[in-house]
Length: 167
Image (cartoon, rainbow, N blue to C red; front, side, top):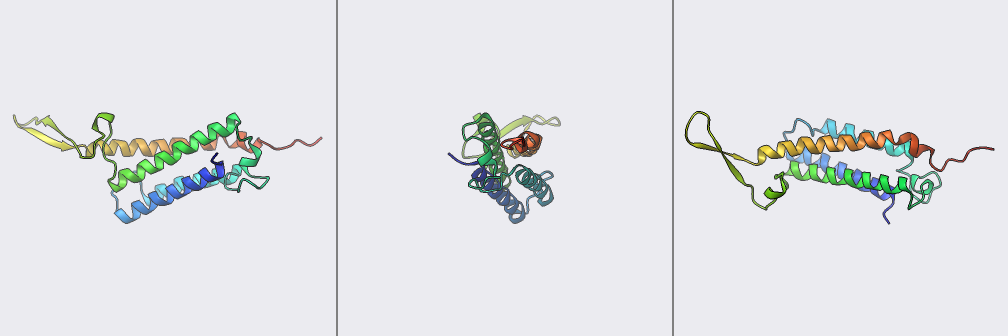
């Protein structure tokens, strides 16, 4: 089973890959900028430090050692981290041009073009599904932001897990 610590490392690597993509591609994105990615990663790292997710699992203060491997908390947290990693990977693919299409019907290897009636003439104008990728970009950014917000909301619960009360 993959540990929470391993998933933290994977997400951190995905953040780095996303930041590198933005820097190397000179992407024009209103949402994914070097600053916005750094802010999201900072929030993620603050969460991880607060709950002990960045501590290796063999150490007693790690989140992995405090949560039972098959507990509901461990399972739910693992699912959230999997979604974060997936969203970060999708963002990287969108910004690098590896993933442009939005609907299941459009998921082919070649971009599709749609014909829309032109309001000024009888001829139709052609638009690329690149417009749809901008919606994907916003959805992906919002997804990452929401996931990190959910993680931050779990801080009190996760921080208290495994702490012993004094008698």
